[in-house]
Image (cartoon, rainbow, N blue to C red; front, side):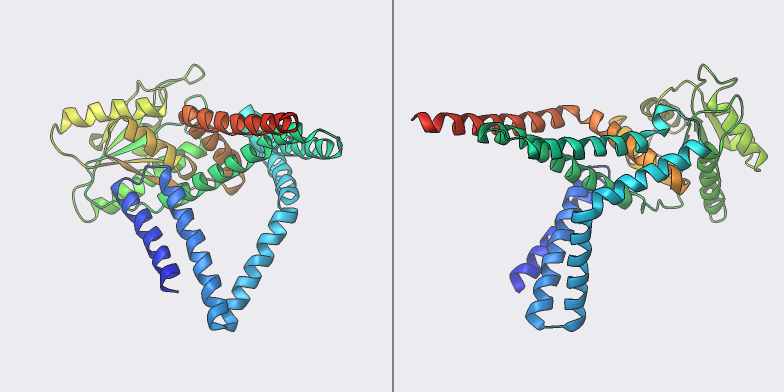
Length: 346
């Protein structure tokens, strides 16, 4: 009993130390999931060792839920993805980035069809061993997605102190010269923090960061500033950074502005939508900017597409790591299949 509880405590401490050292680490999601798994084992053990009826009920209910997810989860997910795709196509433009739930649903159906075909084919044991690498790869990415979702959720709980010198608002595209709702939510979040800090101390400067796209009449920074001025923010408390074209440049160019104004130590936060918060934190880390973010709300129907896009971007950022792991899985299955083929001839 003490060993199991102790393991749970150790896994939580490991997560907490890692998170406090740097919240912007993907491994924090893995460590928290290990803690959750350890906690579940502890609860199961306590339930049956103490014969506590309430705990036993919770455990059995959880087992039933997991069983239903394992049996019907992929089918429920496919239906939910199609429903979401229909809603997004009705409310948003039909760009590739807005159709990711549709593509994922079609991809999952394709995987189911291929798995049924493979199951019915009479392949040799060696070929089956080689083909087994694909389910393993699927499980690896499922595990990776779960870790990403967990750290993305945890990072939402960042609550910066009301002692900031700067707030960086990250741009996200305009409609001509107009601030769309997605970007407006970021500015509103920055204004909310600005007013909250201004009520107790000196308000921070707001840096509006974003250049001008090919289809935009003005820079994102200028459009954001105009929006903030209409909301009552004094012009002297606004700063324009209108050269950046991506999130990394948002961080790098804003950092230069802040260092020019306050060469020594300064406090800063950045504002973006909640789905983009963790990846923006990774870019802040890459730019060597000691800044964490606060997230503005996003329409629920838009979140699935946004989270898929964020995960793909995270995979691209860590493509070498993924390539190495996938190669190892495939090599291991290839070696096992060759061993199966050779053994009968020895």
